[in-house]
Amino acid sequence: MKSSVERRSDILELLQQIGSHRVEALAQHFGVSSVTIRNDLNYLEQQGYVTRSHGFAVLNSRLNIELSISDKSNHYPELKQRIGKAAAALINEGDRLILDSGTTTKAIVSHLGLKSLTILTNGLEIAMELVSCPNVEIRMTGGVLRKNAMSFSGVMADDNLRNYRFDKVFLGVDGFDLHKGVTTFNEQEAHLNRLMCEAADQIIVVTDSSKFGQYSNFVICQANQIDVLVTDDKLPHNYKEFLENSGVQVVIA
Image (cartoon, rainbow, N blue to C red; front, side):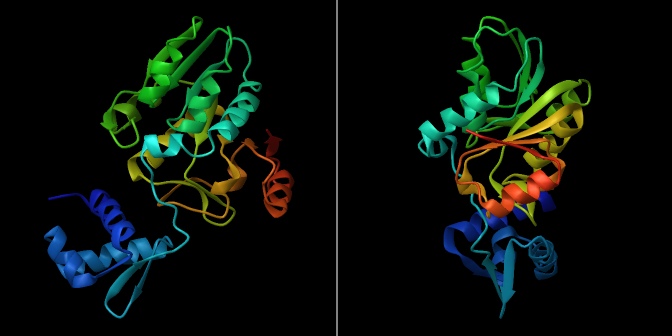
């Protein structure tokens, strides 16, 4: 039987496909009691991801869904390169970095030049891209590969993060909301991202403006807990004002 973490993630995936589902049908689908499903839905409703109405669970319309890595690659590729270049400018010779998995963090790699760096990543495609950087020592978190995202997570990845310290972590995100916080789709990856933030002296979020006002399933941190945001010039004014008043450096690519 699946754990509550896995089941709640699967519930959201199912609701993303069809929009809504009866509580009893969900219990039958997952082979658990209606009480168990209601507890799952109570949790998801408290987090703002679903609404319950007349025996149905309905996906919140502002919830951002997870796309495959190939789908994400087709979204704003030129913009991501601009953001990647601006993010790379924040990196100093000799830095020890974490690059979270994702297409925006991957865009940083092509702008690293000949800097001598140590980079740890949970992204398989990022590690492969880093092979072309002659002066970068590449480390991987290990763990279980999520094929849809081409990223590693799990106990092994968590344990590896606890053994290191880094200068900076670059996070790609699925949602960035001033109230919901910085979020991602997968619970295990959100947990790993939190450990990345704890292991680094500086937290840098790289994201295009389409993620603002959106949120995904699981919180990495609150918006005012990051140190730097690298984004494009479509950043809403109230976001910029809030972040700068909170001491967050905003870099416009």
